[in-house]
Image (cartoon, rainbow, N blue to C red; front, side, top):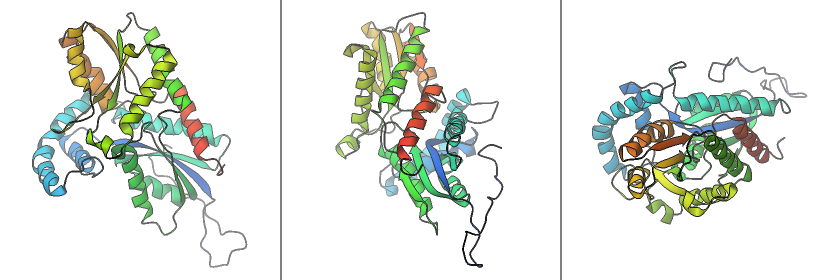
Length: 355
């Protein structure tokens, strides 16, 4: 039985020495929930529209005044973008399971982490949820609480903290708890952008991938998801944490500064975002004599639209059309053993005192 299928009602019993009219309760358990950004249920227009509406209506993501933003979103963006986003998703869709790769990978991460933790701690329940789309954060938390989880650890799978990713995932969980009569104790995992095991895992994945190539890249582009540049001045630590991750990985590899460069992707709208922009960099490098490159996206815990389509497909095309000769994309850590070892280490650290 998979985590997404309906589970039987938990076994309930009256607590020892309780009054006869005390309601029966399930055994006390601990819940661990992996949180990721989200995914549409399908690639058709209405599925994409529902997903994009939820995503682009989040004030953590788009913080413009609703008086300005909502008419633009409803009347213009949501009439066009579901078509283009649907075409992009179809390029990477897992047709065997009829779902996005992000859903496939996140499920596998949760199942593998569950096996690692429950071998020693059978009271732990590991599940996964999406901030946008399904399985939703409220539905997963409600199910775990019904199964007896009186303690919950939320693990937002964003190595670098950002308000539009980490904060909004936890916001949604807090919102769900507001409706509960009996709230569980709650812990949230902080960012792990400089955790030694994370840095080592990224560096090892780079070494392993480059060792299998028949060419030597002149540059490694470390691409992070972008955000408006003003967010840094407003107190968001994301940009600084991205730069620190890149520096620590480069030092772990023993590379000179010029061999690794940081870029930011997926900008949206007309205001200035964090620079340099990935798309402009890919078009410029061949004119500077850099015709062999490798790319990696360490801000993503699982491959998704932004990595598999935006970089590995469209980024490759832009680079080669601009005169590039060799391009390779290094996959995310996904459900690899090195990644699961990291997630287990992070979970055990955050569960200290509970297990």
